[in-house]
Length: 227
Ligand code: MN
Image 1 (cartoon, rainbow, N blue to C red):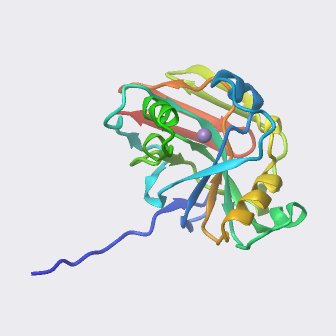
Image 2 (cartoon, helix red, strand yellow; image 1 turned 90 degrees about the horizontal axis):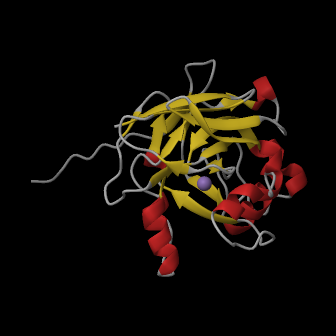
């Protein structure tokens, strides 16, 4: 009778150390690069940022296999700058927000685009399209102490060596401080929270057998095999 339940704390590596960064929540910014808004049709380009979440255990480490998700025939890559918070807070002013950042990583917001499209059409939440198992590949977090706060850097992803997304984080509509300011007005942020900051144009489908390689200059790279 009864179960013994043991849970593993989801975490990501910290670059250049044996430390782990424990993941509490994964917040994601929707539509944060103009060219991506335009490719996904017709959204208001000046609306305030909006957010969704993925479960913390959706984290997939660099080098891992990504199992093609069920109930989808059109799962896409979205390469993103990831912000890791070392300090929490509510109603954080944009001018103070960077003081809360522990470090930065490279993530892929894997998206069941067909399920997301169906949800949009039916005015349902995006959850099934976004918050599925293994949907948050993320590289090691590089501490601010090592790289500061990157403002401008190439962000890219290749599928089997062919570059599909190629932008710059300076194209973000809502900068990291602005996005954190908005997000912290909606939720009290805590150490261990990650924020995926949106993706540039060029999102597209993956299939089993693909190798996804992406990076952000000065931060790092990530490689994931779709199986
Ligand atoms: Mn995204």
